Image 1 (tube, rainbow, N blue to C red):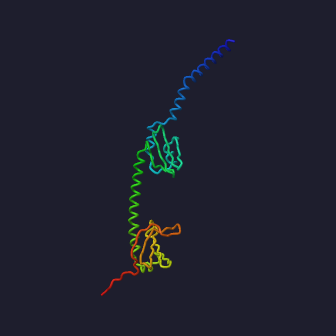
Image 2 (spheres, rainbow, N blue to C red):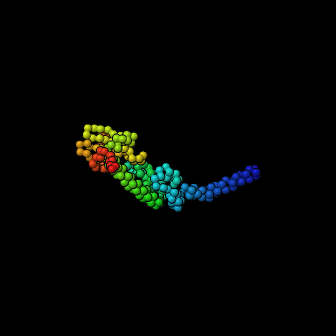
Image 3 (cartoon, helix red, strand yellow):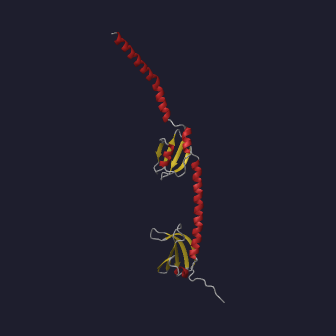
Length: 216
């Protein structure tokens, strides 16, 4: 009987200690779990520094590592918000990173550099196209006929159509010679639609024959 009472008392003491342990440690455990899930603004901003203009939505989410608040607009534009507006990112309809309202100032700077680079490339390309069109338009038709490998000629009544591609990175140019007016026009060749004449680049008098040097 004495042994039974002793065992019962021991069991009660152990049970009481277990309950007390749960009551003391449980709040700390829950608090620790919450701390693990919470990401500081400093961490978010540190991750945001790794972002680059033009990154895909998937790449950005992989770098940021935590789930954002995501909002999609009607035209396909997407906004991601991390933390309490700590990092706010904007994506275009192709899901490419193009803006950062908060947390990633480098995106705007990188975007501006890309825009300026494209402007320079466009200016350079325009200059090349115009000089190529002038060269093409002032070339004698005789010289064109003698070089069938570079020029493709078709005839439609009083109009002569000539196609030429200046280089591999440039569009095909279309030269139209009007034999009744002796006027030559050069356009960017339009592959699509019924009218092959795209943007106009040059107008001048048709040069039929190649200039020949007179030897005395």
